[in-house]
Length: 88
Image (tube, rainbow, N blue to C red; front, side, top):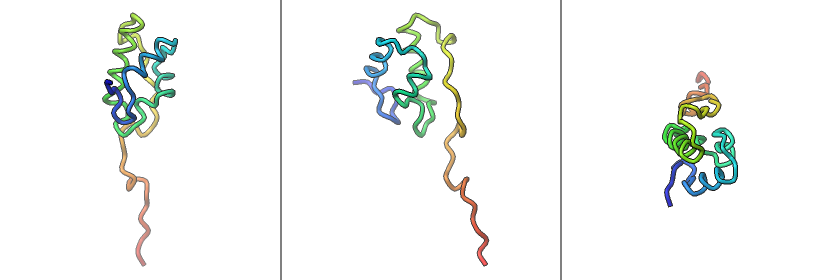
């Protein structure tokens, strides 16, 4: 078993199965399998999934649209969202 998305434990077999069933849109694969939605935000798995899609569909990697970015693009520590109250 080959893990493609380590953040969400998505395997090569799971990705290929959906592609074989007709799911050839990266955004749809992302929504169904949650690839690219873990702590790394797809920096590791999205390029791998693009190469799998290219191989399985006969497209060139640059023909495959990247998934929609949702902010924050990079992981942000929760402290960045919390305002500290002034101690009185």
